[in-house]
Length: 260
Image (cartoon, rainbow, N blue to C red; front, top):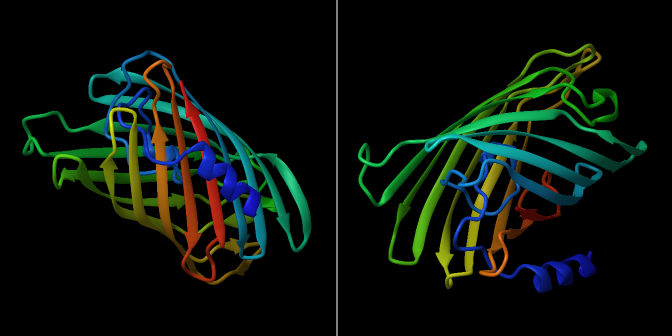
């Protein structure tokens, strides 16, 4: 684990300033900060790696790809697919996860004060992952959420996120609803770098698998993050660390991604 901390520190030290490629936040729950822009290019790609250690007896490794496009100056839509590898008490499991689809709508300027920004998001997940292996929800999922940010000074912005996910019943599995939230700040370091830090949580309702209900639980993390956009490249490099604050959280999480 120490090796990955060193890799993160050397690779991504703060959070990037000018957006090269926007994102639908609900598709990237571990990415640093929140994004309130819509992309300028028609196709926008994201390749990411995510790892979590010690979460409810499970270690997670994920490789994912997300493709988004601007539908209008105020809308962005896209979808993603990931490959998951889980090390659990019952052994090693791997395979494709659920397909995610989502859209983000940014409230146009003029409806709220200039220093504030507001986005609404909606999406769904398709049950393509194997629920018996823990790789998918078993049923379809629906997401609704909102994002808000406001300038606190010339270089500092505060932001909040609130969302809710519900799932239909699969063959043997019915996931409980998930309430997710985040609140934090981001700091513009210079024209290429911006740093962020937030507290984010995922409150899980009671899951039901083969007729047996589990207890509800809550993941809460302290999540410093970073984005770097070099002037010479049409790309963005992002990284975030998640430090678990509850017994049900991953003890340590890491995400690294590139947008282009």
